[in-house]
Amino acid sequence: MANLALFDLDMTLINVDSDHSWGQYIVKKGLVDPKAYADANDKFYQDYIAGTLDAVAYNEFVAAFLSTQSMTDLEAYRDEYLKTWIRPNMRPKAIEQIAYHRTQGDTVVVISATNDFVVVPIAKLFEVDDEHTLATRLEVVDDVYTGKVADKPNFKDGKIYHLKNLINRFESQGIKFDKLIAYSDSKNDIPLLSHADEAICVTPDDTLRAYAKEQGWQVVDWAM
Image 1 (tube, helix red, strand yellow):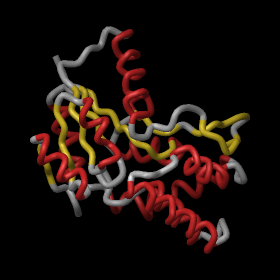
Image 2 (cartoon, rainbow, N blue to C red):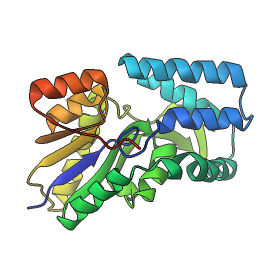
Image 3 (cartoon, rainbow, N blue to C red):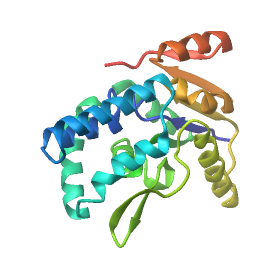
């Protein structure tokens, strides 16, 4: 029986935080008030690093800008963002590890706290389709973002909630897994890593590195 390989996105598959760098991109484009937006974006990112992020508040902050733009314009901005910020930061070792799992017949899933507007197209760069991508869903009505979160943020314990729903969908199709293997860099993913049968800490932050040592989890370095 094959395994389910779960990959966090930011600072695991890519060498940047896609949520934060999207904010940097729209500031550089002059699409938002540069100081106010950058200050708020940086504050939320520091909260994330500290493990104190209010995930709903942050995602509504991100979605507020999306709600002011047409989908056509947003997709054009996003295409440029992927080309200039994401493609150069795709980690070669991450690409190799995904390829390895596929040779083993494993199912690969990207599981990220970042919003789906940003995550889904990045996952596709790693050849992971939207059916195998878990992200924080933002509400869209009549092809326009409303500024609200559509479901529980895919953050900390929220990742377990969405993962269980995904596994239930797989099982309803007769697909079962021998074990769950999870990759992440962040202490915010200790719930996910603890839930997995095998936890692999990728260039981890100091807190996760110490916790991994206590738990006997594998630590690898994929930094570029």
